[in-house]
Image (tube, rainbow, N blue to C red; front, side, top):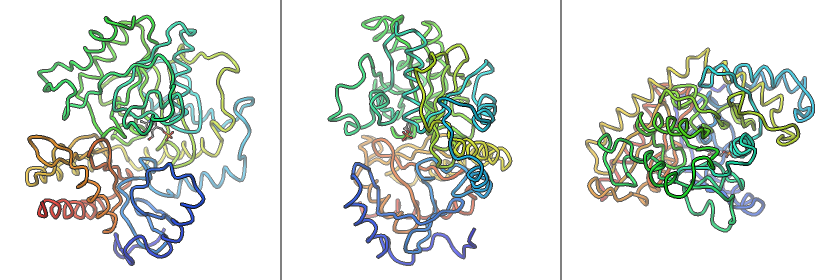
Length: 450
Ligand code: PLP
């Protein structure tokens, strides 16, 4: 780990010459279906700091897209990976057994919500965890309940099954139909922009009653629905944390009809929200929980943890050659230990509250901040042109993100016009302060220019 004199530290305005060269090669060789927010070319990372190929240092408020919860290259995780790599790189769990997969499963059943008996399945990504959950849910009912309910505005991945549930931007689905049949979308509990134009708490979480009143009573018989998939905190859709009653009501609704509740915690899991899994904030235990991203510090691993009686797909019906790779399993076990040893859930909670307080203070001062929300270090700051009309400040947001990048802070957007604040859980208050100072200055400048 390097000793930093000052972070951030911008030597050449990014993209510097090395970055430009690499970007031009990337653009010739790779399919350009990615988003790419700004021309950041990473060389290395340590803790909550990233260094680019021109020697610029940035404070990372992205965590490599909510993946590096224990920070970049955590020494304990790196050591565990190195030692495992010398011992066993691969032997397919699809057909054989090894200890690393079982050891991780023991930890996962402990830290996931619900005191019932559980089983674990391993894949390689978030989308694969969602795909597997779809098959588990349909398979549990032996194909007799084909329907799945998901929420508009959600993101569940980009493979064909997962993208059939995804609905946060048209570009994610355009050109790919026909998608999975029997998937119905209902409005996500997005209180700041309530799809029903209601106000919480007077609404009584009508968005959940809507499922019963306007879907299950009107055109889909509940005994044809295998599962409701939901993100406890919407990630890509805007870092939205719905009111407590919402997910509790959803749990009751699914129980009433014998429908499985599937929490997609690919982004919100593994400590990001200040709890192991975000759904714990609602005191709800889903029947199936899908996670990935932060679980193995960047090594490919997708995980499904579900009730023992639900995880019953027959032999040969679902598996994946690399799923539960021993190196990824060992990395995930080390990540869990780091979160425990360094009390990162507590750090995420404490710093998350601090960041929200700072943005809420700024909200009183600046017209551009419409809403501040989230849990732990999963914070959304929605930018608007006008607080009354709530017109999304889309152009301004893009300017803010790019300006922050040039000044050494990495941040991206979520949903319609929210800043997505998701630093590694290991970040210090000192770095948070430096990062916030830059964002606050940029926001003030944008307001002055208007
Ligand atoms: N589900 C959620 C909530 C996500 O945020 C993502 C990725 O952003 C996915 C699923 C898909 O994960 P992956 O990109 O690993 O396939």
